[in-house]
Length: 231
Image 1 (spheres, one colour):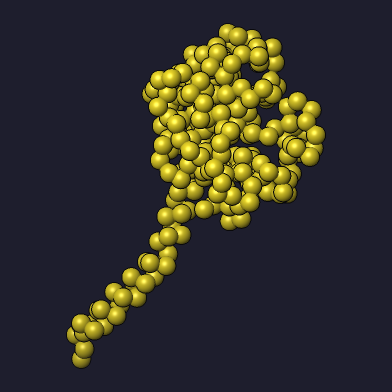
Image 2 (spheres, helix red, strand yellow; image 1 turned 60 degrees about the vertical axis):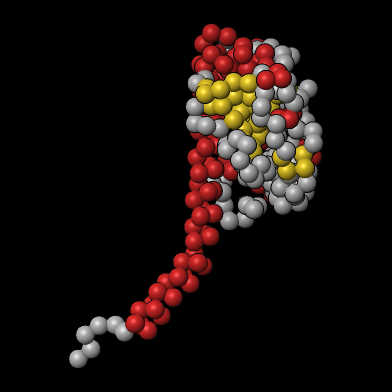
């Protein structure tokens, strides 16, 4: 009667286990990273949304806030008193100069995040938020892991906007009557996933910038789905 496994059988079994692990580990790691990304983004979204709600108790309705303020003044006036931060950087003291890339792989050279005059704060969950006025509204850039790579739109960098009616919304929200061609219809409460992933330069696909990836994640019920351009 056979009482145990031979050395050859053990080695073969271990080899099979190793092959299966090598095949499955990358996908498991990627799935874990996706979940962590969504968790941190959702936390930052919640922190900023709650700050605006609390700010209305002392500053009045957000519909009547001063939207001509600089990003720094807007943050200090309406957001700062209601968020817990680890660090805050203003002006030339700002150490967070990072080169970001679009999902397409090209460098982003016009992102307000680079500007030393753009205030950047480290939120209580470790994400970095930059507050910028781009001339047509406020954009909050959320970097979920700070200086660490990959520093790419839609992967660790996400964009939010401030709506005078709905508070924090994903970047691209139609707040100023912009044409359907340049918006993803969120302003009509009828977001279009085909637009979010389509041919617009801001769309969430591997050939575009990825600026609308925040909107896609929210549209998909805070989930990074299989067709998301994760790279």
